[in-house]
Image 1: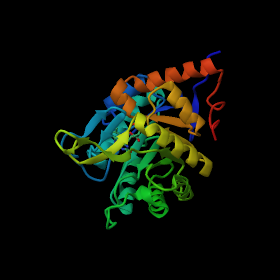
Image 2: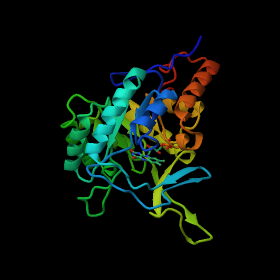
Image 3: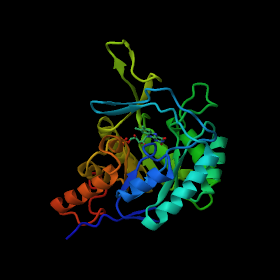
Image 4: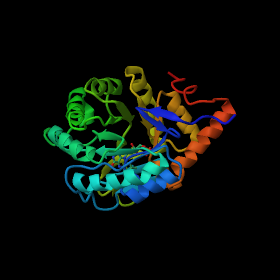
Length: 308
Ligand SMILES: Cc1cc2nc3c(=O)[nH]c(=O)nc-3n(C[C@H](O)[C@H](O)[C@H](O)COP(=O)(O)O)c2cc1C
């Protein structure tokens, strides 16, 4: 019997648990539609902030031996323009039955609320809240994701501004206790958690004697991130009861199964789309089905949280 890949995420029914992660191809309605047509269960747009941002100069993303490192610099068209794009994307995705997840970031708690209100007007099915960005009101520009207090403050501000649209708070892996931060976000109103964003890192060009990225430091993603992401999702699944989009280093169907076993409800794919192309998300779903058939799992529920 063919395995059943359908998945309940919040009040949404996904045809499979594979979700396009934020920042990879999610910059236009056209690209979001292409990933949906290629088999994704849901798609996430690239994060948008209050005002347009050009991002960093090249090179901004490098494929190294074990994944990617990027410092794109949160390039985005600003919330008003993004809301127009999302409204178009939502209309295009509706006949395909593929939910749309918007993604937002900001520099202050107040700005998070403002961006959330503008984006909510486009009626995405869910709003992901990227709190890995620096808090500009903090002397050291500490990311909101670094403490329970700032994660909770952003969550509350967003929740107050989105009406009935569910929110998923996206956590950073480089914190001492990610379970506590997830619990603080859920306590403050998060309906779901996305985990994780990239891990800070850097590459050095030994011949040139200088950093490879123009921004010097960047975020590590892809296979090097997988064990870190699995550990984070495992800790979050033990700390909270809300659904988790497990993200980080998922490249094959077998990786996706591991993420579900760590307690994820759905599975995000970013870097693999960069390396395997637009069909990656749908192809990983097909590989997951093949893995389930081979191992005798009929439903995702039979695998979910097995390793907890
Ligand atoms: C080029 C690139 C751009 C990204 N941009 C965003 C972004 O705008 N917002 C966000 O929340 N995450 C962003 N991410 C992080 C991914 O959504 C994801 O959390 C991370 O890459 C780990 O998943 P992966 O190993 O499957 O890539 C970006 C990642 C990459 C590689």
